[in-house]
Amino acid sequence: MTITNRTLTTTAPDGTPLLSHIALPNDTTKTGKARAILVAPEWWGVADHPKTVAERLAAEGFVAVAMDVYGEGKMTTDAHQANEWMSQMLEYSDELMNRCQAIYQDVANLPEVDKERIGIAGFCFGGKIALDMARLGTPLKAVATFHGNPAAITPATKQKFIAKVLVAHGAEDSMVSMQAIDDLKKELEAADVQYQVDIYDGAKHGFSNPHADERARDNGIDLGYHSQAAKESWAKMIVFMNDTL
Image 1 (cartoon, one colour):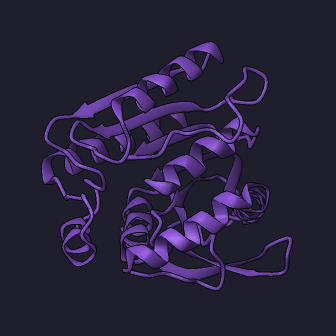
Image 2: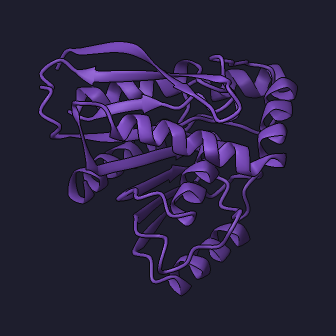
Image 3: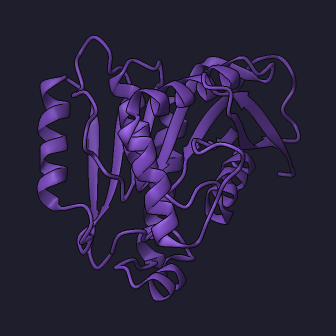
């Protein structure tokens, strides 16, 4: 399937332009029937990986949007810079969620999109964003996380968290512990959320990103690409999104 790429410009509540990357299947008609998936990136920003994810999702028939939560299209390959930007966002979590909600609303308002069938796929920092959006009541139908940080701004509740959840986690992830994943399971169970957690043997943090080994080498951090885990978790996510949206 051929796709079209363009920029989706959202104005954050503080006036910052959020320049998200949108990928549309070329056979998408403006009838408001297409399913959409937000892509919440790793702490690097809207770099090559989330753009590629959006394009792969578009090739599967979804309208896909790699979210620019930092604003102005900022991205980096430097872990210190990425950590600084991420930490700023986490410090001002209300502003972060307001930005995410604004992007969500702009996607829901696209003429091609069925606003009742929107999901999100989050990676690392983006995994936290995806879960927190659902926790705060964003009407997402499906949440998929890849090596995501499950720590909550506000724990899930039955009244607000309506999405089904798919979690892909690496058994060798030194940045997100198995205890954190177990705590997420308890949180979701308490909120009566339907979820599935898949643990991938031998996979480190960042296992889905083909650039992870390079980023690890350049920054001295414990990341690693795992082709088998990446392939299997992607396939499961596509089935999950097709079944849920």
